[in-house]
Figure: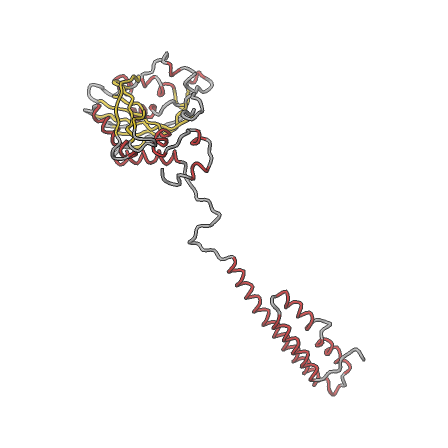
Amino acid sequence: MSDVPEITPQGVEAAVADALAAAAAAPDTAGLKKARAAHQGEGSPLAAYNAQMRHVPKERKAEFGKLIGQARGRVNAAFATREEELAAAEVARRLESERVDITAVASRTRTGARHPINLMQEHISDVFVGMGWEIAEGPELEHEWFNFDALNLDEDHPARQLQDTFFVDPVERHLVMRTQTSPVQMRSMLDRELPIYILAPGKVARTDEFDATHLPVFTQAEGLVVDKGITMAHLKGTLDHIARQLFGAEAETRMRVNYFPFTEPSAEFDLWHPTFTGGARWIEWGGCGMVNPNVLRAAGIDPEVYSGFAFGIGIERALMFRSDVQDMRDMAEGDVRFSEQFGMVV
């Protein structure tokens, strides 16, 4: 019994004081766990006093049992209270460290961007929708009749040869990857009521080289008007309007005589670019003309009653002029750094 402490009120109170001090001094729940083991575990002073109860005379067991029981209750309550305090503090610290300001832009989040070709196409479309025109669409895999025959391109026309057109096997099906969005114009003339005012934007394919100024798959926007009394003056006014909307109030267009099977008369048109890098200048932009009477007849439209004009512009070229892009390959290679510099506006 020499190793068992004698039960005294002073000794029990000292053990309680030490336990309460250890609980209060615990810096975190891990430290509190160690303090609990030292002051409430089997080797703790209070546990030793409790073990000594077997040697206490019967007439004093109630006295000492109450003394030790109350002491252990005080210690248990103190440790439980401290545990709640420490747990709450740790939760608060963790929440603060994980706090997110939902109004702030995350420092590691890259700002998204749409592809500038899509943005430019939508911008041009919006200009024509604002004029009251409609946007028309058609298949990229097209029948030869819509892509060539209906547009007055004879079977021996150079554009129908394999060096310009992607033909789809088997050739007997007469399917091609459309070489322009003009087939949409023919489909519109066949399907829509007159008069017609449409813009047909979309991808086209030709067997061009992949270099700084050419792409085998690129984007066009072709316009078509069919109505009574349409003249080249209406065409010129339309081209000048889109030029000013894209390149500023001083922009304008001019026409140079050319030949296209589906328009007569036909012209190439140039853009006067007032803010071009290196100085204002004329730049070739697209083709245009009055719709060939043969094309109107192919669509079942009487050319003696109706006339119309058509034009085509390259979306990639418009982006190059407007945003000073030097190499068309940047538009096709899918490098996100190219799109990021435009954001959501071109």
